[in-house]
Image (cartoon, rainbow, N blue to C red; front, side, top):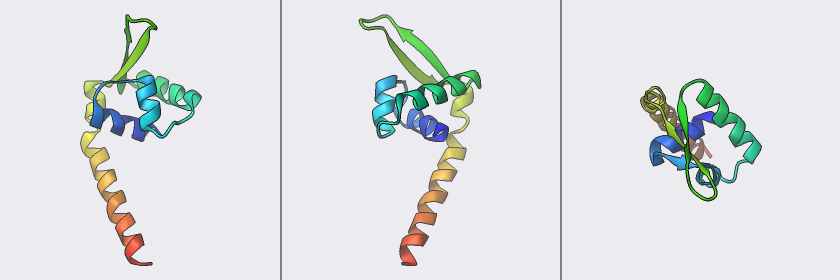
Length: 90
């Protein structure tokens, strides 16, 4: 799921928790929170508290996280080609 989180942030930029949750087809909040914490520990995303009511948290990729852009693009391309091959062989 972490790759999908990174890919979603690459495509959309900074996002709030609930925006990510919806973009990831309503992933379980506990799972999303856990994966976000691990991505932050590994310095791939940063978390910013926004002073609003209620207080919200925004997530964005770090410079280091953005270095995954080409790699994730390659994986997505591979997946699309693989899916086409499966569909064409049916």
